[in-house]
Amino acid sequence: MSTQETFISHLVELRDRLLRSIIAVLAVFALLWFWPGLAEIYDLLALPMMRTLPEGTHMIATGVITPFLVPLKVGLMAAFLVALPYVLYQAWAFVAPGLYNHEKRFALPLVFGSTLLFLSGVAYCYFVVFGWVFSFIIQFAPKSITPAPDIEAYLSFVLTMFVAFGVTFEIPLIEVVLVRTGMVTVAKLKDIRSYVIVGAFVVAAVVTPPDVVSQLLLAIPMCLLYEFGILLAQFMERFFGRRAVEQGAVDGAEAPDTGQKLLK
Image 1 (cartoon, helix red, strand yellow):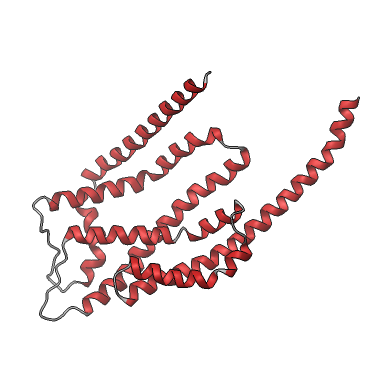
Image 2: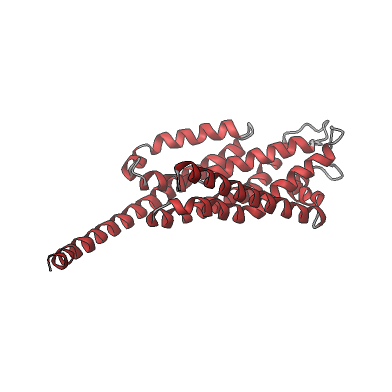
């Protein structure tokens, strides 16, 4: 098979796997449309804010088609998260034939580990951060003002926070990858610890709302996750280093036997 034919076959396979992923997301979205319903999903997403609003207060929609578009966006986001394991499987099935065995053993835990960490960051943001942040913000509202957030602005804020905390929880995995690929060492990660702490508070100040509570709720986990990543990278470095030495000993022990068999 020529190089051009191989390239075309890869493009065809990529197209097929992308279509399967899109169909899976749309199928889940179709199920969510009827059960439990897109409006109920948005109500669940808005629950942390609704708990902090004064009694009898509701969110508002300033746009004409906003009441339709916002639940639609939420439904697509939820459908993608539900279908994410299948989407990752399609991505893995596409790249797996071009990987070595040791790369396959490392890549598969990497894919699922990154997904688990991202979802953990989203869950931490939803169940812990939102309650503190919204309560803190509502307390500073003047008594002459009745808070009534716009649903589209609320969705934009929630998605921004989800991405920020989801990416933040990827820090340990990023450290492991950097150490595993030889780009940095564990000792280097320890040396730059003070700079990372300062950078964590700077990132938290930029990404989160301008209040101390939300900044601390992002900066402190970043620092703790960085320390956890150092421990995890140190363990991986020792484990894979020992495996490499053992593998080299086995190869060295088998080499003379192979040579004697060839001489015979």
